[in-house]
Length: 296
Image 1: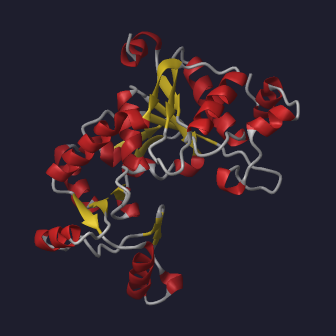
Image 2: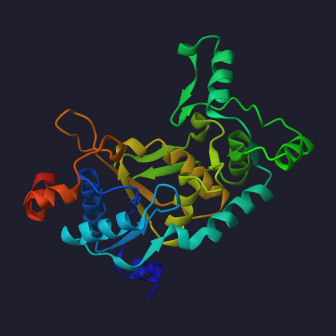
Image 3: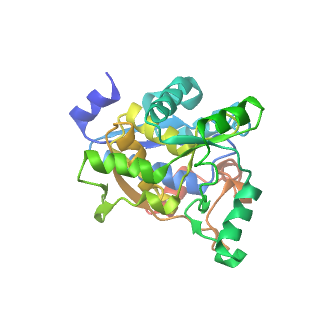
């Protein structure tokens, strides 16, 4: 039975989607339990996805470890587990569809070039226009002719692909009046993807961006309630836009608090947050962890 059929019988489908680029920490555990409890409380289904699209950072040993850690915590999920590397064609199809709509373009700019251009336009570095994903891209490559684009590509220039956000918004708004996504706690939220400017759809290494991959994955797994940390609330605006462009059903969203360490900083792999593996070695039990989260 498919996840979609299960959803129709039992209720919502939620998911936990870790990236195997390091060991899971308490922040991951909280997010996983939040999603699992959101499904359980609605007699729904909890799904798992391995977001291993970044070949350079994602390692099999971390994937094995996270599956072991989640099982140790007492979590179970609906099979099969979706692994991004097994579905590359799905993402390429998404890019192809956006290309066919004429709303993505190659971008040859380096990060340094983008910062320099943003600062030049803003007259001073402290006036740089910052969006939710960093400096708002000034559209340097958007006005290139097709011949210019092709010549640079044939010359071997590395390039990413960006979405022409304002053009994409115009297309979606022509086709539908309701331009909102639903927050389970706060109701309808007006979609404002323009706050991010022209964001990246595919990286220079050829991998699709998190934003494109996640909306395709959620649709493929029939996820109809996305639970995520409050730090990802704003990116929902661009996920909504991509869902409408690709004619995918928009799920509802629910956001949870971020766990903080003893220094008041959120747990993060890049800061070498204490892993679940380390806590296990210290004799900490799943029951203690669950109690510390306030879950029952």
